Image (cartoon, rainbow, N blue to C red):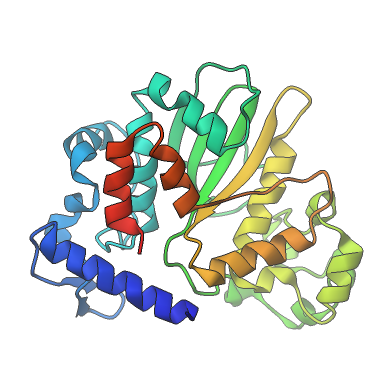
Length: 301
């Protein structure tokens, strides 16, 4: 199955879910092109994007936060809605989900018996020196000595690369020259530190062999993942370990390939925890079969 076939199958599945489960026949509008689509909810019904068992409690919780909904939150394939549906149930029932999170995040030996979950987390210290809009991380899970920056993908399949508005001919140099000669326009004009910290996490010689006339930040989801990996590395100390996590459906080949490309150049001591959505939901069944079944029905094809 091609990645586009997978995306179309998801849209079809969600379209049927909208009618059969949510009882919504009206199509929602994609704001970018003003066209109706079957897998999109009418904006007035966007609250239905949260699964029924947690819907009312979530929206009451939402009113107490400063979380901003994504522009396309009313899309049934919204990764932000998926994020809420996966992790909101765990916020107020920590004892029930503590061991699940330890197991899925591969930290069974973690002695911490408590955790906190934050949606749309922002690094207030701005260690990467991101000007303008700082990066929001889908979920930040804090176990005390171990912390997880979690990124969640569902149907994403586009090249969300470095901003094209500031690219120039220097971006077509070998990555080693871009670093050594300070050629990155993002770093020169906006004072970000993405390129400066690259060697802390990646094998620069391997990158140089791969990106001979190009910058790796020009390539889709790699750009986002590389930044998150750098930030987790910068935040880690002898007292606290920060680990970047990516959760995505196993059939989304685009994201899978981007993750593998990213991992190919990591230094041996740098982690990127990769979890498929199917693994997450299957493991959850051992701790909360009802929630797991709701999530399977909604998201898994």
